[in-house]
Length: 370
Image 1 (cartoon, one colour):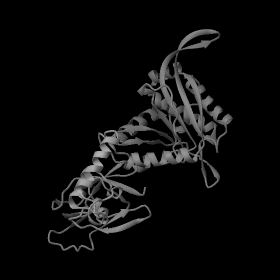
Image 2: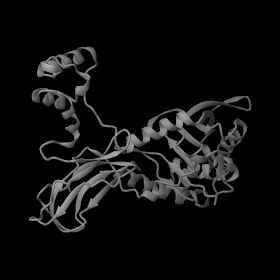
Image 3: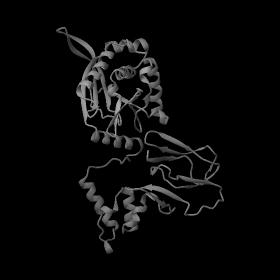
Image 4: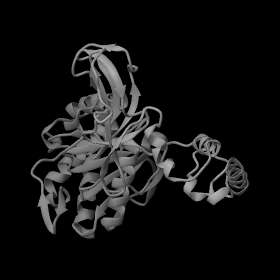
């Protein structure tokens, strides 16, 4: 984690706060945290506005006595740039997000319009004295943009979880050569197990993956500095969709847990993920990931590997299909599984054996389950 985003200030400047009282909500790369007041006093200065992204360790606000003197030199905030984090003194009359516009020669009316419409003034050529950007320049630019571009309904910042997901998955797809294997699995036995033990299909898949990983260790590995690290622990991450983005809570030591234990733990972790209450240790340490879109009526899809892992399994919906068995057509409940794997680490044959073993387990071979 390098940066965080201030989501909401729960207290305003000038309000009294008690030690330990919640003051601000911050979105990290993976979850949301409530930050408490470090001491009792008055919230004197808020240095970072809601919606702003700042580096880890930046000062967000000052808490002090009502009559305590704080100099302008003390009121500083770390602001990240393309190259490094720099310190900028925050002047109360100049909001930090627009301080950079002061370097552009523009009239106050033009700057106001630019702020209202999210326009980068460096994109506009001014027609005023010495190339000064005036209000008419902004209006012409806005008219041109409205005619040449599709109408934008809203602008959503790519921050926090969504930003991290985008960066990590883009890096994964560019770095790891993805290969895919797809197999259809009959789910009759899995449905019986689900009913008998009151567990979810996702927990059955997680249990099957854990057992298959214990028999095919190469899939439970990662590539670091040209060396292959094969993990002893089998920790299965399960992708959970939340309002703030995709989270992957981890079932640790999944190979040592019964399917009922996995089902209960998954339900608890998924609920915490949706509430933004997951702890950091519940989001780290995964060695393999499962993503299931079957509940959204998706038949099959090609997932992107969750780095630094070397493989991910995608599960589609369960649907009745005609299947040929002993030269006869029968209707069976079938599910599509797609394995995406890093071809630098795993070849096609070992990947096929691993996926085949998962198929065997789901179709009825739960004898080795612990």
